[in-house]
Length: 165
Image 1 (cartoon, rainbow, N blue to C red):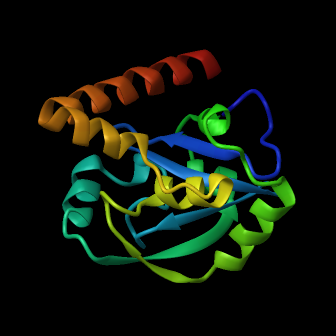
Image 2: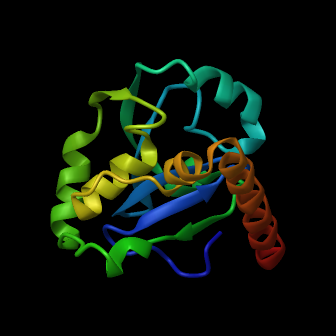
């Protein structure tokens, strides 16, 4: 749904509504992403926010790294290329990012909503830094930060859908 095609190693942010899912572009229309099976691997049109939140609040779930077509992961949800930390962290070379991402495919990793989620996973691959803006919003602003973050994501999602229709 983005106007520009991703380049190798680009971070892809998918707007699901109450949360954003992240993937990393590895070429040929494919992305690698970290999911808890049945939760964040499909578009918001096929998984409700309440089921997502209910399923991941128990920390210690096991996730899996998958390689899928970007259109399969995003579905009808809007997405953008978001390499916003490039100015703060020097990204690894694209070939190195893609190689590291492909080596992770099929691996089962401990999923922790606050310490290691899909955003942490892709930013570690691109930058070597385990960070999540979504988690930082909640940690800095508590419940109010969470509500503001959800509202912000809903507005951005609406604008992107309007822009692309």
